[in-house]
Length: 317
Image 1 (cartoon, helix red, strand yellow):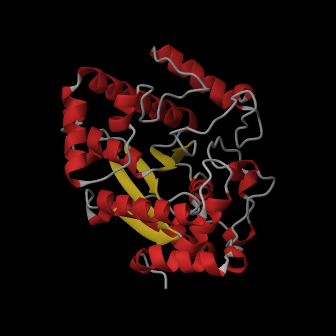
Image 2 (cartoon, rainbow, N blue to C red):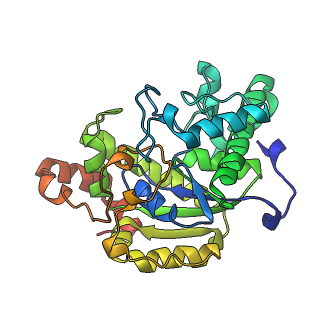
């Protein structure tokens, strides 16, 4: 991966904001908020791995993806760039159709020896290096085109995945700002096990969450302290204006002077893909604590055994 690193100074690289968090931790809500800023361009989750049938998939603006003028223009711009691009497969996800290659390219972040071997494998296996470079280039071109269409000079990727941030950082192409976002692990695991896609039981959800936190911890060590902004989903809901002002100050952009207590984020036109929340009729800032009355004693016991230590490390009792 090191063969793609740029020698340019940070100030010369395009800026990329990356939301790093476990799933079901409020990243879509945060994306919709930050999308209000004129300098921030985003489509939500650029990895675009859960599109399903593109004929039925809706953009957050309310149009079907294939009928939305924004996506049609993006497709046209990519074609003019000479880049193959399909709304049914963005080609932006770091994975491979070949099983052996995918075991390397698509693997979760593991740190240590594994990441050393991954980097060497990508550098030394020609077919793998070519695939990695093609995906990296596809991401770069799409980011450029989206920023051009939306007129924002900071691109926000809300994909969350630690693996994706690993590749962004290794490419050396971007001046990266990492928004590290946590949610109470008890709430996150409860939400995760209720989702029908890639179903897991409660024990599986807790193990998955603990693993993601470990991957996040490994990755943030690769960034200077002033490139990482950390907060909790619960803080975002309770102190929305303060948290958003702090993020804008950290990014050195004007604050978003908005009445967050009385806003429907759906009223502004966006072109967000990812979490189904984007298609709700009304998107408001509301702390979701249904888990407190829905978690069973046995689930609490499982979490206390497997996840309580991690939860305390990230600021929850």
